[in-house]
Amino acid sequence: MLTAPVKSDSTIAAIFPPWLDKTAVLGAVAEAGGSLLRHGGTNSVALVRLDRPDAAERLRDAGAWAVVDPGGLFGCVGLKSGTRSPLQKET
Image (cartoon, rainbow, N blue to C red; front, side, top):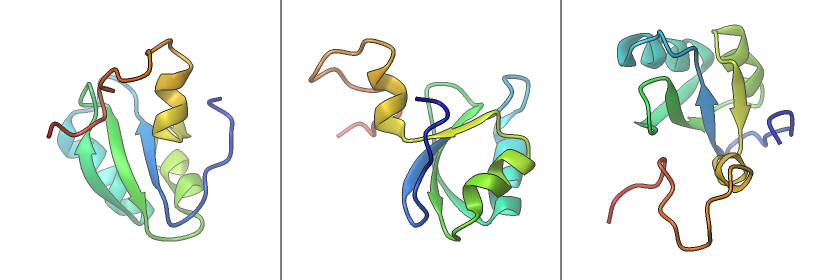
């Protein structure tokens, strides 16, 4: 699942090295042409809106280890239906 392509103009999860802080992740997302919607379960995971067709590649070039569909990311770790994802905004 981590190698699946992501569509442009979509919301994705960008996974950065764990030693990066929120500021560094925000800078990498901005450099790649994406918009940071929120951080995930850790500071190194970001929910990102892609603003350009090549933003996923640019996120990887800016240091992201992986760029994935956020639903697929947590579907492969065994979260049961109805379980709140670490990237899901509280309502």
